[in-house]
Length: 144
Image (cartoon, rainbow, N blue to C red; front, side, top):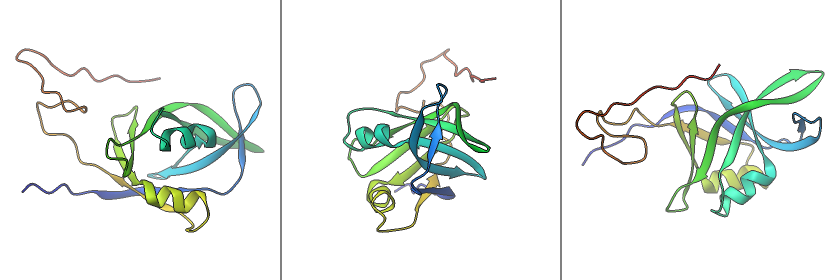
């Protein structure tokens, strides 16, 4: 049996603050701290994601007098089993959080939820479980 080693990458917490979006509208967010970088997930999107219907955007959070959302850095989706919130960052990092821990952080039964980083996928396999065919290659995409 192969074991996957998940390492701690950061944490997720709900503190009740809002961040301003690109239009200047305050959006209530959940803070996601990954390797010292602060991200935000819009609360309404996260709730729809936990219901299993949608993906939630992960956005960079900048501080200048107030918090500002500064562009998409990844997506969060509920796992097929409904037991984890899986996060795929644009830089290729794959993270996971137990959904129970997310609920505890959202409803203040716990102060935060630990975020784990999944290891790189096995060579020859894509991130979504599809094997690369002979002659195909993965092309890394960078965002500037």
